[in-house]
Image (cartoon, rainbow, N blue to C red; front, side, top):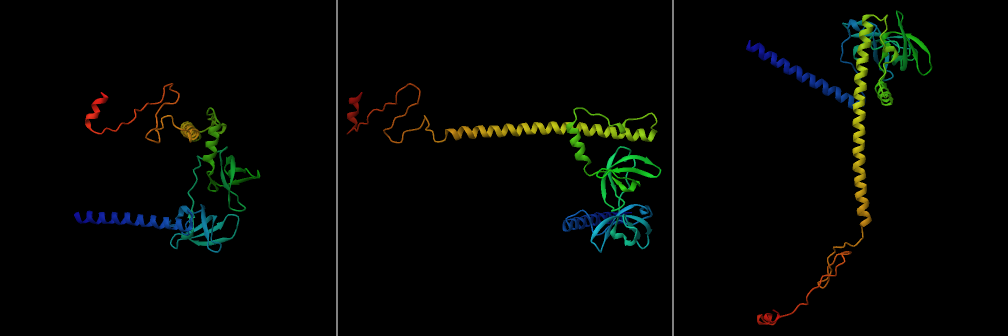
Length: 285
């Protein structure tokens, strides 16, 4: 038993070391490429990869493109893919195929702003979901207002969603639930739960934005207060620069000290007397 425990501890230590080595290699690749895209993938292809959207690396052009996985050879770890916008089929090794995670259907509902792959060039563009049917997701691209029906795998959350939400929250004085999130009588239980979940997240985000906005305002006031204090001090001493102090001490031993504006005369000094010997001191008393 002790031997088995010792072996288990050694294997766990080896696992931790391998994880650290992999993380180090990934960070090195990111730094060299100045990008989060690797020139290879460490994930194995499985049967779940079929019909999924993946980022596929083209060795000829040295770029990643969105593609659809048509077939998978698990033993050879190769896949036949079709670049979106190009009907030609390519056989690619798994190290050049990064299968994208499947989108959550509860996130993408009618009225949701997101991004979708344009079938002609395989690039993501901002769009809005108009409706969902058995054929797929009916979307309208924002730039040219053209419409398409795409599968769920072609959708992803907008990268600018957070910044847009923040800007919208800043302009709101009170939170209003969007029309597409209002619960309708004909909604099924799944739709009701999805809408409640989104409303809860929306309220939490709105509340957090209020706290952040209040914190930013307080910080701005404090910075402004400090800057005004520094400027007022600087202005005072700058205006007094070169002005003679009323408490300035005299430059010579015979000088007199007085306070300007006090109404009193200057300090009087008795003239110094040099005594020949100690007996002469008694004459002055």
